[in-house]
Length: 177
Image (cartoon, rainbow, N blue to C red):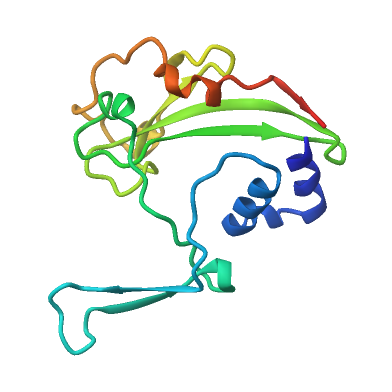
C-alpha cells in the first residue's frame, strides 16, 4: 500500500497530523475536512477591548494549527452514546514491514466517547470485526486508570455498526500496492 511506502520513506514524518491529512488526500483516501485559510480569528461575543480576541495560524499556511469545521456523530451512532458524548471514531491500525512493500490490517476499534468528554480520548473501546463490521467485546483502558464504565452507556450495543458505516469498516486483511 502506498501509505506504507510513504511511512517507510519519511521515517515517522507522517505522524505529523497535517502531513498525514495531505498525504491521505493525495492518495484519494477519505479524511476529515480542513479549512485552508492561512489564519482564522475567533472573538468572544461579549468581551471588549480585544480581550476576547484569538488568532490561529493554519498549518495549511505554514502555521501550527489544523483548522477544521466541527464534526458530530451521525444520528445512528449518537443513539448508542450519552447525550453529550464527543465525536466517536473508528481507529484502524495497519502494519507494514520490510521496506513498506505491503501491509496488513492489525486492528479496528470503535472509540465510544464518554459523557462530557471533549474528545473520544476518554472512551470505552470496542473491538470491531473489519470483515463484517460487527461490534465485539469491550476493551477499555479504564481498568488501568481505575475509572468505572460510564453508566450513561447502554448495557449492550446493537450487534453491528449502522449500515452507513459498514463500507468504512470492511477492509481487506492484506493491503498491497
